[in-house]
Length: 266
Image 1 (cartoon, rainbow, N blue to C red):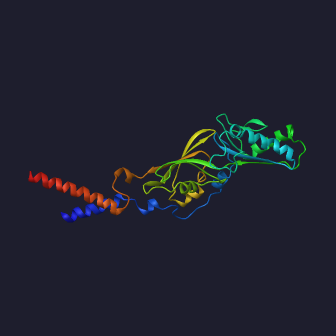
Image 2 (cartoon, rainbow, N blue to C red):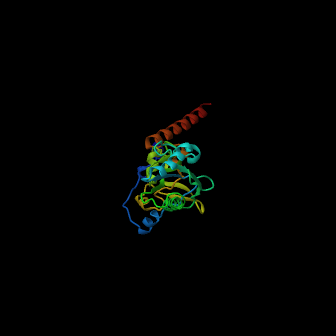
Image 3 (cartoon, rainbow, N blue to C red):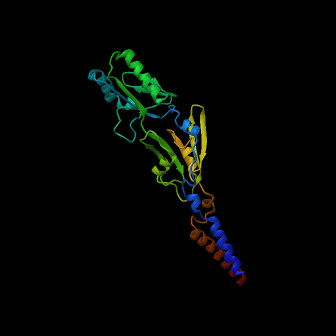
């Protein structure tokens, strides 16, 4: 009987602990897909709360100073919360408001919701040439996202909202930047919640499979929400490792045995 009990404990501990396979990222051999590469290269369309970095330069200093002074005098109202987390672009970062607008000094309000970065650049350049700088060949305008902001919750060591100052950020980058998942984070079923012009969408990716590199959602979008769900072992409460699980089961078995002995002696 004792042998059967010991065997039962060992089986239970091995089946309830987190395996290496559940903890290891990017397993297997990669495959490629030209269609996924095409999807990942589609230009991003701007959404509410995105932060745009806009730079206007020209050899004509008097013209450029008009926009620089406007930025300096209206850095709070004009940037509408721009420059969060960085001082380098404080006077040229613009947050897209709930109506899809940005407020650019001198140019005023401009709607950019659903536009690409290139389309916004052309829109600003067109307005400048029509109303202010008609024949300046040295005019140069740069429009780009001022980093990728995302929110990560669940079984992650550093949950919260973060900004990574890169043009492209993968879900692996986001997880690593947030201190990696806990030992009971489900790497095989990571949820990405995304707002698009068509509404809210939810995607699920498996970070233990190397083919996630070819996923259409491998690169996150601004304002994505990443949800790290727990493994079933967490709800069981039996432990993360085989030793922890064995200790839990032995403790439980000891409690049951002690209860039976006490009951017999009453």
